[in-house]
Image (cartoon, rainbow, N blue to C red):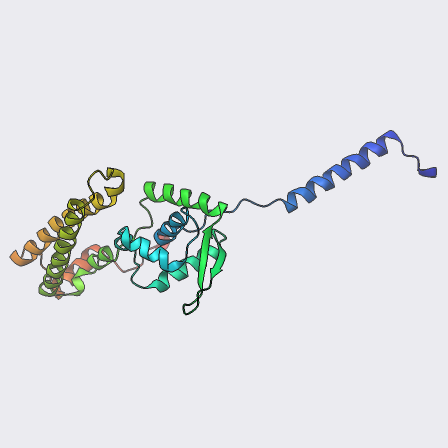
Length: 243
């Protein structure tokens, strides 16, 4: 408008345009909700350990061993713990709080959990309690290919497995028996579950071994070919019209 005057309609239009631009700008700069990172058992234990306060990897590993967590996740190599910590730092679930320097000793990095880490730890815990998908034990994969060995070879390997299961069960029973008097059951649940699982595995694997020994479970190259021909058709299905 001449002289800088604007009519009422133009003023409303300008105001509307400005408001729209402001909203677009605000929305583009707002942090977008991110998905919960892929969970891991060791990652969850690390985050939960850091709820107690900042600590370095060596102390963390010692606490895991003292709590029996090295029988829950694979902690045989400390490298796996460092790799997990590095991943959690990249995801901003854990941060480096400090570096402790002691003469004659390597520097030790102190790790601390972030607010995002606390939230993710609780969500991972919920997911792991309710979810059964995504668990792929090696043993089940091996069972699906048991016919790759002869019945005699399969039985020999399963007998070795049963021996180890029996040893693990004895260790678990001993851990339960030697638990401190008055320790709440809440802190024994993982051993109770391990005992129940080991007992079930021993019974089931023992039954398969017995069936192999007695010949009730058997196979040969010929029987495998016959089964494949009957139950695993390899030809493409014929399309309507002969194509």
